[in-house]
Image 1 (tube, rainbow over the protein chains, first blue to last red):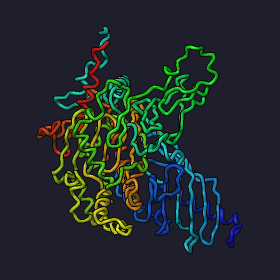
Image 2 (spheres, rainbow over the protein chains, first blue to last red):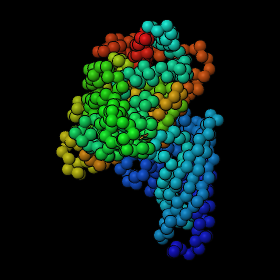
Image 3 (tube, rainbow over the protein chains, first blue to last red):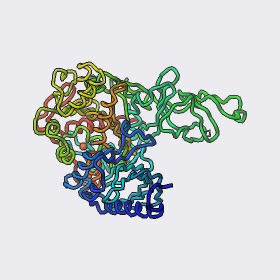
Image 4 (cartoon, rainbow over the protein chains, first blue to last red):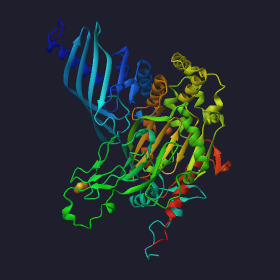
Length: 163
Length: 430
Ligand code: FES
Ligand SMILES: [Fe+2]
């Protein structure tokens, strides 16, 4: 049972709206707006394989606030050949499940499908995405986002965008 | 001698040594690729694994030698074996687990069982093979395997020279220096990034000792560094470093000569960027000498070394290439840590690796982009040549071969010279 004043359906609707907003921001590459969605202590992680000791394992990315800002700065400045221009992406987020609600912290998981296009070549990526969201006066903020790509521990390609 | 003229007897047209010009077909011709797989990847020593990836008796990992999928495994006595991952009955792969531990390999199709050394041990219902079926003739296809400094190489060629002769004295010396980034602990592979790039394998072979691209391709990475670190990477401007042909296609790019041998930096003060780390390690009770050694190790040595044909040592990681087809190559970037070293030091190494390397690093995606651009570019202007002549103007003799400016293309000339030598061998055989 969710110990929140809103009904579970209302909460799911609110969470879904937030996840869709984030997905839209990422597809539009409005990265400054994306940074606004985060708590300063938030961690953005793309792990590899099944391990969950992210701090002590090699990840695709393990971003605290500083790394996140540097990553976005790198995208924005236009000196990175792989992201100038980056691949175009169209993504959907679905199969949203609220795992738990603990005070202001909401744990959510969802499926994310991303299709990228660069040089007219399209690639498909799928990920299980795990969020810890914090409910604040200004709406939800992300405390943790973990995107586990299918075959994350195997052979991938390089990415010029975010999941 | 056969009457057929070898298809690529025109090797001079492929690589013109005198003018250091490479033909477009070198990246584009599927028949040439096939010939390379036979004459290079089936003939020479190919890196397959680091010993720390399968440390125990019975532990194994899957790898490749050219196009051939192989299993690298340690038997009960600790001896390392490498064999083609293919059942001798009707060819099924005997193992699809990338890494693990086992006492034997059993084919999933009809159950033939193989020992850790690849020998055939058991055949279910053997009667139908008759009495003269010789198990010893049906072991998995074995490669010759030798190691140096924990790096395991294998070859199909039982007549190949010993590994250390193939590497040569200078490569061996630099490998030993490279491993000092264990900081007094054994070097351990602590993870690997893998990404596939639509490019010919030689585009990658050229890259690890190419300093010329660094300030351009990696500008966006440099911009994320603090001033002191950025200065460290400004080796192009300083004119201190060099690139040297180390023989047999191998080459070294010495970017920061002051970091050739980390032991020689033991009297230096700790770099400001790692002060916090030194403090953390001190707290764990390490001696001041150890703290210094470990922090130096975290920073890594100051050179890249490229070994022909498939592995390189790049500051603080191994880069391994696996050819897939004429225009597709798989790349692995293996992160290195200190086996038994302080956790915080290894965490720092992991974060530094993630910063530059892999599919979402601040460096690798830009490398991958330009490599692909080479492959796309060679689809036009077939008659034009690829130039690897940079730095020939003032090359001088080094220990094993020519030595040039840090941004010289000496390493590429070394690799293409070896390529030509290997492709030429056997050209006049039956
Ligand atoms: S294919 Fe392996 S036992 Fe038949
Ligand atoms: Fe590079």
